[in-house]
Image (cartoon, rainbow, N blue to C red; front, side, top):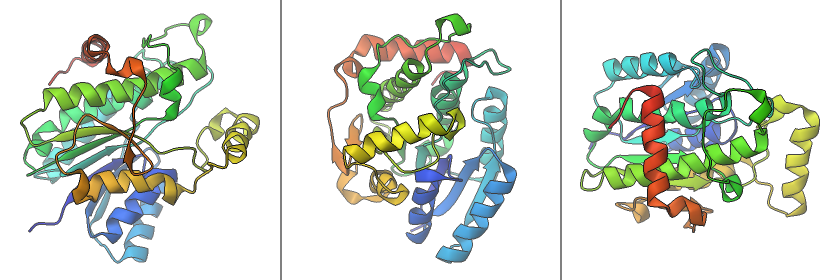
Length: 283
């Protein structure tokens, strides 16, 4: 049987990098997307050297820039005949309001829309797999979302923490809507909360905010290593136990109930239509 091909976004650091190493050790053919050429090249070399797996390739792409995502998806389609696992992992928490050159708020673009367009653009490759798996990395932050997911155009209406929570809810809503649309196709889609992980995530917002994140999880005795945080991603990507399971939310290697609002079918349809309208692509 041909070796499985896995694509991971945000694999140059944190849980994405840990998942990439784990899957390379399992002999997956690995594709990863990183924003920084130098870091991506270094991680690619490290994975090959430390795992002995030479089937590792990277693409440089800023997932917040929609044209870059489209272009990168085109390159991947030129180079690969199929994808068996897609892990949409890249993410950011941005406390200050910023717009991309596409006129999209940066948190929404990075955490949700980039992965929405990447997934739909690569659907042809996923459908060529015998049983493709799509894994969307969300967060426990989605539980505090108010469910109002929008492209916030001015700083006056922006709350970085709320927008982050809403973008993580969007990941769950997208997973559930996608699972529903793909029923009978052999492709499954699930969301995952990796937990509180000791990485440099959110360091861009300053040392104080980053330390508060760490201290919060340390007090709860729930601060995980990147390898521990990546464990559920690797489990969903590779375990026979979850074959055929779709439209679910996972944490700590187990299925878990997501927020009540995430099961609202009308809201799932709304985020799909909103996203498709912003990027001009649909399934």
